[in-house]
Structure formats: C-alpha cells, structure tokens
Image 1 (cartoon, rainbow, N blue to C red):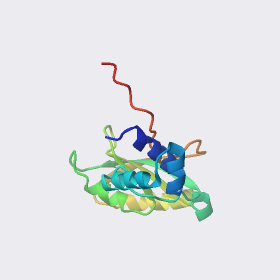
Image 2: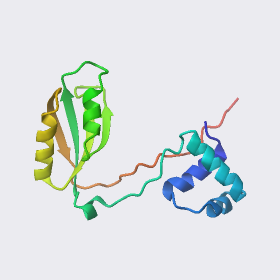
Image 3: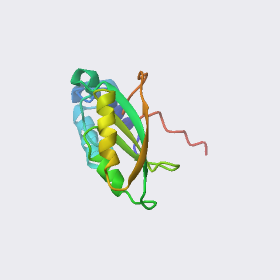
Image 4: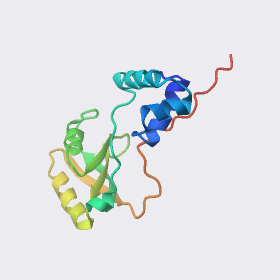
Length: 156
C-alpha cells in the first residue's frame, strides 16, 4: 500500500518523470534524501515499473490507431495466442477479455493499407479465428497515467 506522501510523489512523477528530486522535495516539503529513498522504495516494490518517453506517433509515421478484437480457437485461460500478439511491434496493448473475443489489442500503424497487411499477418497466427477492428478517427484523451486520488477516509 502507498501512503499520502507516496501519492504526492507519484502524482508529480506521473505528470513529468524528469522532475529533479530537489524540486519534488521542495514541492512536498521534505528533504531531498528522504524523497529519493521513497522513490527507490517505490521502484523496488514495483509501484514504479519504469520511466518512458511519450512519443508523438504521427511524427514517426504511425498515424493510424485501431482497436482489434481477436477471436481465437484455444481453451479458456490459455494465453498462447495473446503472447504471440503481444510480441508484434505494432501492438501497443494486449488484453485478455471476457466476452465473445478472447483478446482486445491496440494497434498503431501508418495507414489503412498497413492495417490490412497487419490483420492478414495475425490471421496466420495459429489459433486466430477472425478479427474485428475499429479505427480511431480522432483521439480525445490518451494516457498511461494511473489516477491517484486520495484514498477514502476511514469513518470508524
């Protein structure tokens, strides 16, 4: 579990992971050494998984986003096909789901032609039965940032 101070640190880092330790310390009113120790503990415990740069996909030529449901012919709970899908560079997210499709994947490619080629490729993966894709026309909000509101207060 994380406490209120950890939440403050995480809220700062989730908005800008490059904020200097001294600035975090000033913002929350702690010594820089104490903040650094807390960050290291959060990293060791796996609360902070990694630091990464957000890259504009259009600047890299990957202007099309699609969400694709992948229907498979494998037993419930078998994740073999999901592992194969997750290994593809075009796949940003792979989710094992409840419902008609076993997987929902988020894909970034250059254009509809590249999407068609990608779908043909995944159609050849053993176990994939069929796919159903939705193309994103405009992204209104996209974030990997986990919301960190204050925990509910104990009313005992």
